[in-house]
Image (tube, rainbow, N blue to C red; front, top):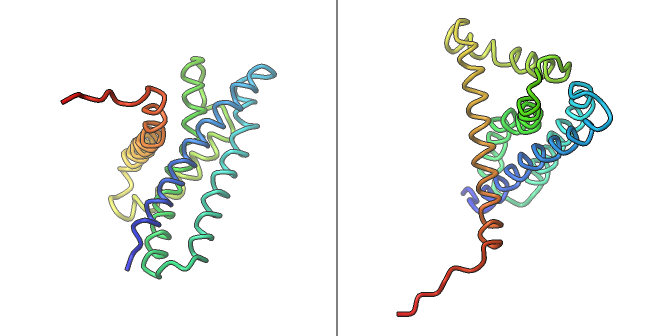
Length: 176
């Protein structure tokens, strides 16, 4: 049997990890802008936040695999971790991209940004070539960015909506 409660809790933690990576990267790069150029700040911050996201994901996965959950739950979590690792890494990358967009700068000059894109392309190119042929790598890359962005926005919304509702106050009571 698969524990849906455990899966839901772990997916909520993945969402918090994505939002945390996005916010932490954005804040750290923005703070770094007071001392240095955008590209230098991104190259200093992005490796640390990417490593933190990977460590957080790995720690959660190891804790789940060591838990008393069923084998089915553990297998589903392992598959989900493999499917969500790239979208989770896209959280910090997206923060750097958003800051570059806001500042009207080209993020492609960042060595870290380029290294991550090259690494992901090296991973996706054989897979897409095997599945679709080599001509669709641009489409696969665009699809990856779209899916990663949607996953991030949805996870942020799901995490932030209850907080926003609490800040707005209780719902008015209708007298009937």
